[in-house]
Length: 350
Image (cartoon, rainbow, N blue to C red):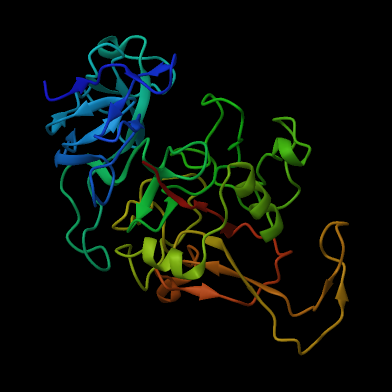
């Protein structure tokens, strides 16, 4: 089958643990092959994946490249978990992240991926769009290679440097303590913006029903932090939005999170849809004065403070694009044309 369990080994006079070991007797529960770059899982075709030979997950050694058993059918724009059978080490993909599938009863989640429709560009400016639905290779994660936030669903890894949400944040996105909560990156939600303010996170006094009164840079940053994420920097956004339509906009407010204007890395509504708050801030100092626009949380000494918005909105026509940026608004701005998507760091373990 291409995998095996290592026997129990002593790690003291009366203590034993299970796991993969090397010649020094060091125990490895999760380990990556030497110099391996990327997730331990990799695409072998549009709808199939395997685990890299030499991988170790939960103490199971996969000595050869081992296929993951796939579900009978897929649903577009959906996250799938990869479960590990606790007895045999067999790997099974399933749409549930809370209930193990039949082939891995009693097991645990060791990875995952996102399944997308056709139409993802593979080159500049919507070039060479894919013709069939597929597993998004940039979304593959495992116990040793994943986003640094608690919930890895709905994200893409950009060249092993950082992870970013595939979808714009939703007005009902809420960072609960379990996977039953609404993630920050999910298809079909009403887009969070100045006219559809999102739920106030629990960390900042929310109860699951109260909402912000607006969607400023401050509020977008708080919302991102509640998910263990942050706003993306200009350079990060420009890289992640590569491949999306350039110098054009959709022409009307989309209202909801949709699969359109996609980037090479799978970011939906990346350009020409809604402005997206970025992490970068600036000011020129020409009009220095105290400005009390932080909703009672102190004042900013510069009425020239600015926070970048990225990508362009539905009405920005040829100005929209992957490197489009506007530095004209202060961070306390809220508008129906400004939304957000979130990013986080990259963890490589084992």
